[in-house]
Length: 93
Image (cartoon, rainbow, N blue to C red):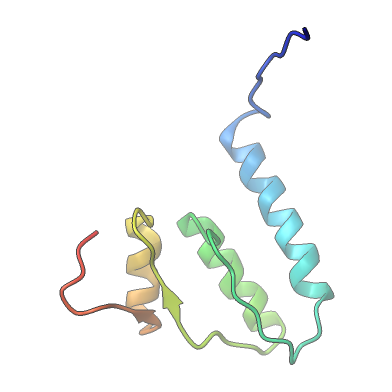
């Protein structure tokens, strides 16, 4: 038998920075004309705003955002304000 210890990877801000760094490398390495679908990203309003900056830096735009059950209200509001959120009539979250 082995003993396992579960430890958090540090403060939430550090985890968010790691996520952003990983996604940044992917985003700027991909071909500009390659389509993509992201799930569970952006998960925070900060991630959404940083993602918007990346898109602007490359002269790209997204066509739509779909919010799944449990999506962050600030992120949903952000994409709703931009007119990118696809909402199902009568859907409740």
